[in-house]
Image (tube, rainbow, N blue to C red; front, side, top):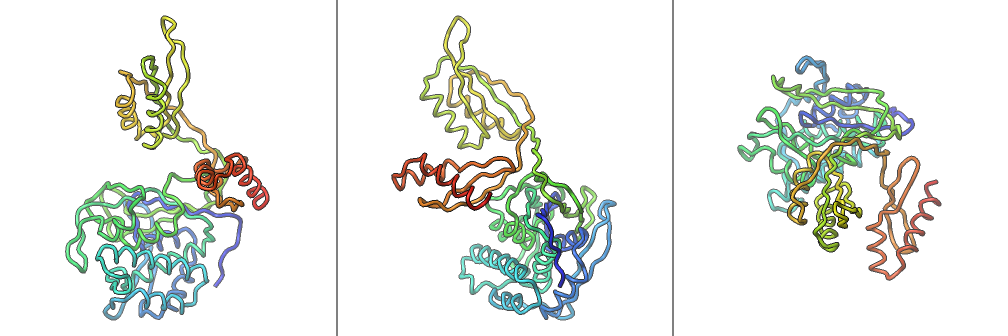
Length: 391
């Protein structure tokens, strides 16, 4: 099986209409993954399924629909049996590892939902032949495209109810809800299931982050079709494939300010702590000379637009100000990533961009507190370790 080799390549999943396994395989094929190679590899699972790709339209957008055809009733399977199928198939090692990791994640979610040991989980919809083909096909599609890094937008889960083997379930289905815990999600559009357990499992297992599109030079775009054609929105999963550019990323932020002349430094310091804990991108205090020569302080908070109301409420609650100023600004941010380095004191995460790097302060602080080592020495060792191994 031929797998492309290249410079660093990114795949970005635009899940504005949710994500399912068949949508993902279709989008990968539409973006350039060899559909014949996917079909041949899935045959090596010996699952009794046949697969095909069809060009369809969703709200006028041409998209690839991935079909799994089964000639005999599907069986419920345990995790161990599925992992054996994957291991025995003719697949690249990384595909086997990723597909197995996705099913392991699914098994853990199902076990948590039903409060049973993972060994006793029966994979109903998840373990059906079509879902096995979806997961393995998706992992292979990423490999065929040479994806080195996968990112995803926040997931549109949908709403309403869905019929499953256990009966009528709320959307998101319990397994989906367990899988996306801690990830950014929302519900918009028709009252149907938009993100399935299979799609959620692949996304949360393989995506490095759920965020806006990283700076990249787009080389291919693929559209994978869902099973229905909605009037409200195109029922497709869109995939962008490209190479990182290292360019600065422009984002819109809200800047919240207040001039305060009747609060103590301790109160203002605590307010800054509260604001940062609540998700502010930054919060600073600057000395001012206010009217009539009174000393004061400028509190400035930088936040995402959707955070501004909640953070303004914290300012009103924790300080004596009676009003705040809010304006929007453009924030230019270099593309950055995390790299972990090993120091004599322990592991430290480094925040790295194309032109700079810095140790994560909280990591260094935690090590200093636990070991008694000087903070400056830990920072120096982290910088040395990064330069030694990554430059």
